Length: 84
Image (cartoon, rainbow, N blue to C red; front, side, top):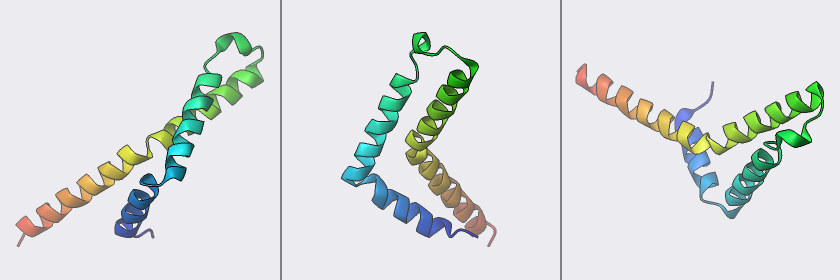
C-alpha cells in the first residue's frame, strides 16, 4: 500500500524542480505535435497520437491530482476528528 503522505510530500518536492518544468514543456510539445490531424494518415498513427496525448495530459494533471489527494485527506481528517 502506498503511504499517501509520503507520496504527496515527494510529489510536491518534484513539482518544485527545474526537471518538472522540463517535463511539462515536453508534454505540452507532445500534445501540440500530435494535435496536427493533417499529419495523421493511418489508424495506427491516430491511435498513437491519442495515446501520446492521453499520457501527456495525465502527466500535466499530476499537480491537480496531488491537490485532490491532499484535500481528500484533509476532509477525512476533519471527519474523523468530528467523530470524537
